[in-house]
Image 1 (cartoon, one colour):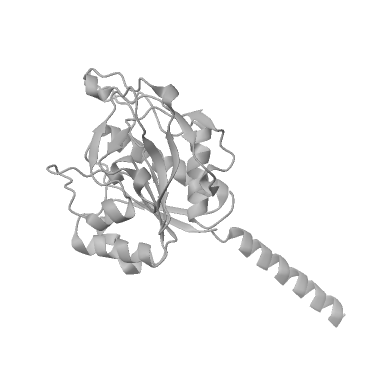
Image 2: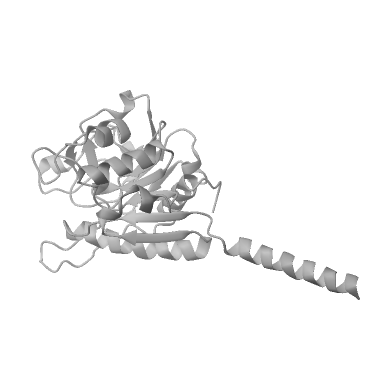
Length: 274
């Protein structure tokens, strides 16, 4: 009788352990955002928070988000394995120092579109050399396409972020950025996706310089010195012309692009696959 009771207790305890293990988050991610500067970026932020929350429930990781950039401090960041910037960057010296320390100690980061933007003079001056030159490698923003349009993107080399993606695929509509620095000449930067020449002409104008007819444009890359991933996607198309601010396109819902982002998140979370 004693042996039977012991076996039952051990079996029950083992099941509890398995259940607890299955319910333990694989990693914890925190997204910072502002959602104030452009309706297209605001639309993306809301869409991203919905999508990442759904993916967290489906794939058993924790996803939190905040527009309080003062939480970008050592104590708060210690709770998370992955940090996301959905639309902007930290602005105060304390926030910037905390983020740099987090990254240099092995923390992971995913940034979208406007998180890489800097232009002097503007409301977002290039006044943070470590972030824009050493970390992102891109330097200042130089120009963009308009209107938001899909592009054919081409894989480059091998990387876990690219696992299972076709050689080329069509992105969701987006406003694409060009940068001051030549990412190709930076040995620390590994370009993962760039705009395929079959995309040209890219953009519809109306200004001629907003339509790209040729050139080399990396859109997703990582810095080999850090656990990071930058994606230029993150600008939904909005009906500005008729002043309705109606959303005309979205970033998520494109199966290949969704897989790219999920691959990236799980690589940053140090997991091999969802």
